[in-house]
Amino acid sequence: MVPVKTNTWRVWYPLVIFLTIVLLALIMLIPIADDKRVDVVVSVSSNALAVLLGGLVTIYFTTWQRHSDAKELLTQTAWDMHREFTSPQMLAARVKATTLLDTRFPGMSIRDIREAIMVSREAADPAVDAYAGFAYIVYFYQRLWMAIKYSRIGKEMVAPLFDKIFCDWWETQFRVRYEDTGGDISELKAWLDLNHPRKT
Image 1: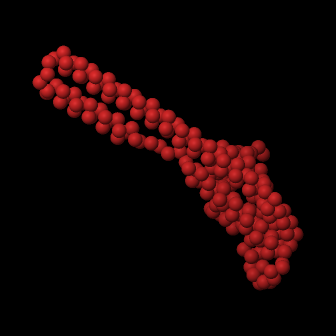
Image 2: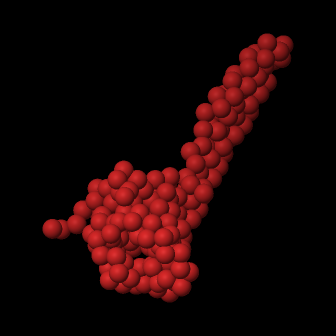
Image 3: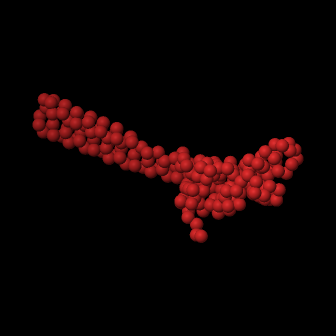
């Protein structure tokens, strides 16, 4: 859930005002004594004002609650993704991918590694695990970028939680191995550079 702008008041308030004016005009046309007419006009006007003020307060607090709930959900998404990022499975994937890629396939692109794995067709080949781990990490960062791009995560939390390790991976793996120019990983890097500049 993301913050939703409400425009209910733009329809509701003019309608209440219009109906109040119509009602006051009808009261003026009804043949009743002037003193009673004044009482009726005052009563209708005060009731209409109470409805308008009550509606304004209701809309304000409803909107505030909706935004508060949405912000809490965005924050929770950031924590959930960080929990996944620091999980034993992700840690194992990062270590295995880094170790095997750097020792067995130094400087090779992921495309070349994938082709080499397809040629060998050995299920027990450790490179299969290395490639799978690398893919797991890439997919995680793609999901992170989609969450940022479509405002499904607390953006102020992204850089403190994910920037350092992502930038390490960018320098050692993504930039060298991953043909992603203009793609999700590159866009995530550009967003982090823009929103969390690092000291050089």
